[in-house]
Length: 423
Ligand code: AMP
Ligand code: GLY
Image 1 (cartoon, protein in one colour):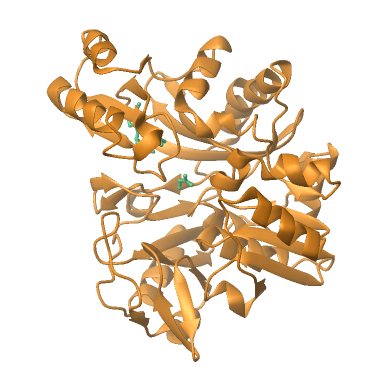
Image 2: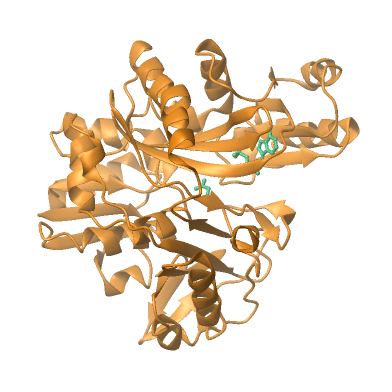
């Protein structure tokens, strides 16, 4: 069968890499893809912000399955458009993708369905922000309502700082239209967990869990990013906790969406904080996480195509996934300046040496290829990933590989999975 993957990041490289391993797949296209993906799939240009362009691509390729990587095409309704034309496509509809596209929608949905989440207030003006802040204790989390690529969240140490962050968002200065409404949230303490499940609109099957590292600097310092690295192990959550998360979070979400007329099919990414009072939802994503997908798929031993198809046809079951007991990790190498401004077009060396380290796979996130050489082309450039029986080994393999890669301005966290290894 012919598969089309929409997107251009490390997550899409991992999807292409895994989908190609299926005996059922004869051809993989990726649009627009990147320099590294082009070594494993036919890359085609497309504007992911244009529904017409994506439909035209679907019309010309007639893929047997389309897998949508990023949130933007989902929130524009690419799944609705492809489904209407009878083209099999993996992911939620535009209505279901509201869970990610609007934080105020997600928070009110959580409240309606009594699913644990931080206390919050939704504000459309500074007057509302000031009134609401009276009910909060510092630190306060300030979030832009709309999509902001991981840059719409400020953890404010004081109420004054929270007010000025909200003002920047509401004025459009920080994240444009996405900040026209803000959500103030109680600050939660604990370990974060990325808990992804596959849903067919009714049933829910968990994937192995992962832990992302969102801050740019070691020790969780500096601004938030799209994610600087992630790992997954067999014991990141025990069976009892996994069942609790399925029964008290994932299933109620899927049942609630169905009851509200927006059936949720696809991957539901539950971003959780494991607090002293139990797990609480920080956010939903309506897609695979990036970089979580890299370590998650490195542990997948069964056919990904079968599982994704089961989501579309309404037949997901525990048997869809066979997981390795191994541990896996992904370390993101980023451009100098990321998550702020950065330059692209820096030549990358050492990729072959890095890829030769045992158990390592280098996923490309933002690269381009010219005359056989790779160049940087985005903020997150590479996801240097490794798998091994022990987390410690996987981590040391990933860092050995990072040490062989060079490009001007390159930076990466040195402590991905560090706390888990120490334990
Ligand atoms: P979000 O996009 O809502 O997941 O927020 C991005 C990141 O901000 C999360 O992964 C957390 O690291 C942090 N964050 C979000 N909400 C909270 C909260 N209520 N308390 C503490 N940290 C938070
Ligand atoms: N790594 C966080 C995300 O995919 O949104």
